[in-house]
Amino acid sequence: MLRSAAVAVALTTVLLGGCADGAGGRLICAYHPGGDAASSAAPYRADYALYQEGAGGRQDDRPLLWRGLAPREAVGFEKGAGGLMAVAGADRIPLAEAAYRWRSTPETEPSGADLALHEAGTAVTTAARFCGGLALGVVLLPVIVLWRIPVSPFPF
Image 1 (tube, one colour):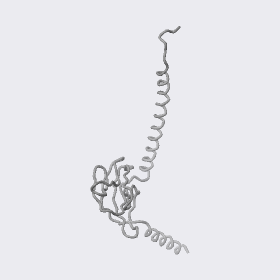
Image 2 (cartoon, helix red, strand yellow):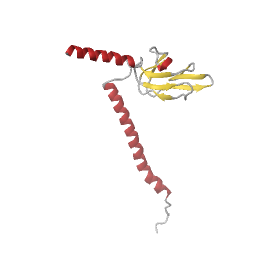
Image 3 (cartoon, one colour):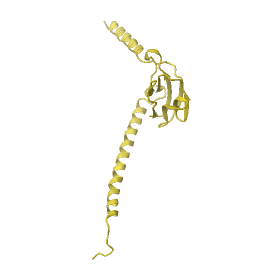
Image 4 (cartoon, helix red, strand yellow):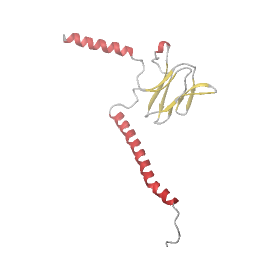
């Protein structure tokens, strides 16, 4: 009984793994023919791979491009006079009109404690920016209001 359960779990894992797309990693940006070309900022230091979507919506397992990017560098697509371009940092690579996806590579993206530390750092930075802006507003508002009130040079 135990052996058949183990075989069933192994078979299910293999079958479900075959249903997933071939490339791992986090989806960063996608382009579909006729759609808008968009770019976003790389969320963390990692290698990013560009994949072309094949027939039937299946993604090719081999990347067309592979670029190492720092956090907040541009990754995505743009359209210009020369047609569709893949954007990777300062690089602009011409592409034929087709469906594409930028993904982070699983080998280089942070995981476990590194990912938790990255996400916590992002949350703390966002909270600090909000609190700093709020504190600046609280300090500057009375100064601006007092600056606008005319004060007589004669105290009588």
